[in-house]
Length: 249
Image (cartoon, rainbow, N blue to C red):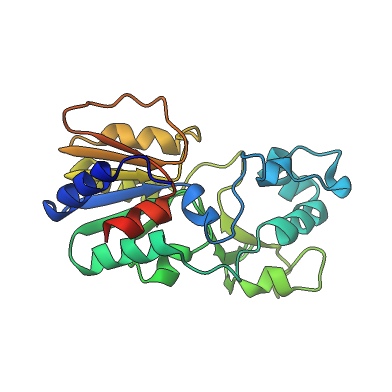
């Protein structure tokens, strides 16, 4: 439930007054599409599965697991990271509309499900990669999303013999430099930054918002954040991102 209708009106005013908006989003943007987050009580990290009791979730999604126990890595990945049936929700759709209207310059997302593009967004910086893309670790050949999820091999391979892995940033790996540079440039150049569906606890991604120097910072989240706000120009709306952006449109 949105806590203050006047805040929605203020959000509308901010959006109407800008043609240089950037959206920075986290897992909460996709939970309304049925994609679980990681750290909430219903998130992936709190889902009990006896087959993985001897492993931490961070290890199961790490480069070390991929290298040392690839069969374990792919079993977990196939079970937990398959978002192919998920559909864009009101937040994804509204953000795509704002881009079409010439107001939204870019989406910077920590999500790896491809739902922003499915909704029609074109300028999307996926700083943690995407489950929609795969590549061979040996020859770098590209493969579609279905290749890993539908493979009957415990460890999927390329014709060259190399392992085919998802194009996502695993624990222990650096974020993609080019994508990060584009995301930071978009944030630093924006007049309005809307942050939604994230607790701002995942670093280094959360640190990128410190590059924002624009006029209005808007945060939409189910829970309050510790991020300091300038009460003169900034806006916090407590609620679901889909509900808020749906009400704004």
